[in-house]
Amino acid sequence: MGCATSTNVVVGRKDKKMIIQESVVFVLQFRVPVQSDLQRQLKGVAPKTTIDRLTCLRNQIELVAEDTGGSAISELRTALEEYLSLLTGLIKKSLENDGMEGCVEFKWRTLGDGPRAEICCTNLWMEMLIVIHMMAALALTEANSLMIPKDCYASGSGNGVRVVSTDCRRDAVDLLLKASGYLDFCVREILTQVPPDIKSKLPDDMQESVLQTLAIQALGQGTEIQLGLAVDSQKATLSVKRRIACEQVIYFTQAYHCLSSCEAVSHGCAKKLLRFIYWKFLEAKAAAYYYHGLVTDKGTEPACHVSAVCCFLAAAEILGESKKAGLSFCLAPPVTRAPPMWGVMKHLSQKIPEVAFRKSQTYGYLLEEEEKAMQCLPELPDFQLSLRPDDFELPEMAGCLSRMKSDSFA
Image (cartoon, rainbow, N blue to C red; front, side):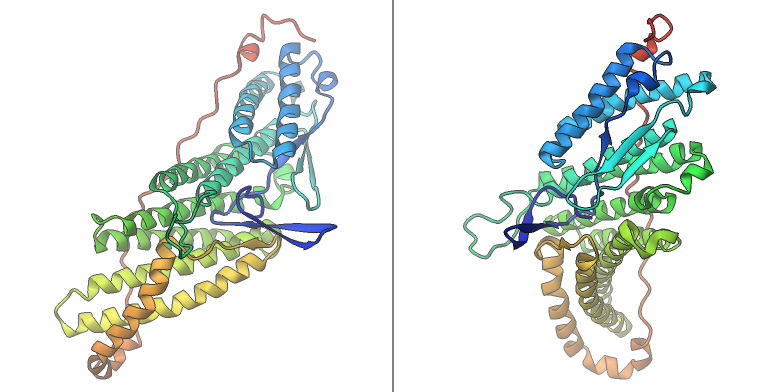
């Protein structure tokens, strides 16, 4: 949305500046802990060493996130993982002791320059949801940073062409799969434990349909990056490129349908996310029709050439629509910047209009004879999806909780 910590543009008066973030990957807003009196609330329920460590980690997460704006990803991830380990132990303890549930009040607030909405929960599963959601936000932010490296333009090229290394793109795919795994876990394992009355009050970006959508669209973005790698590879065939583009269409179609049913889609995170998905869906569809046209055009029958031209013309039209959709996403609050045209979309924005014009001129006589064929857009082939969310499991309980029975309590 607007939490990426890489490339920024500052606009406005000197006394009132607004940072417009660049968004390659859809990132989530960070939340940081608000100080709570855990010592008093957990006294006699958990070991003092556990309470001290929980308090320390919450303070550490807040201070590091505030000081760095969330850019200290490795440090934040390490703290969150340890905090999650302790929290897992508390949940296991609460399953043995019903009186523990509701005895502690956890508070979090949004990080950033905008309104700082606060969440307050007494449900341990809800607290776990917030923590793993934050871990997903970190993974998405890191993926976005990798796709906008500091030295992101070809040295000496003189044409300002953005260059992202193969390793950075592959690492970004891994992070997107990890984020998808976190979000998928939230839906499958955590939300099922949260009582309906609490679930109904969740923030927009933690609603079930939004979490499901985020998990799917992260896979779609991973596929988008894979298509860019395939375009750069001399070994990747047209059929391989078409398959990847078609898979990308399927992911974003699924994500769009999933989010469309969300009640909160008219505002906030869901509204911004829906526009992002529609933008990426159109880009993917343009790419899919382009590569499907190239594969079809290899046939020798006149009908193959007519079908190919239909694909090229459709790709050109959809490409134009995608640029408008990208602008619509950027203008939806919070305002973001689209990255400059680069990689696969820069390649396609040049090739699609050129090929569509050339092929329609070459086979113009066939198009006149096959007027009916021009009225029916060829269907894209269906492929089995390749990417899946990474498996995520809760960490082992921290040592101080696993020894709970032998510890002295506060």
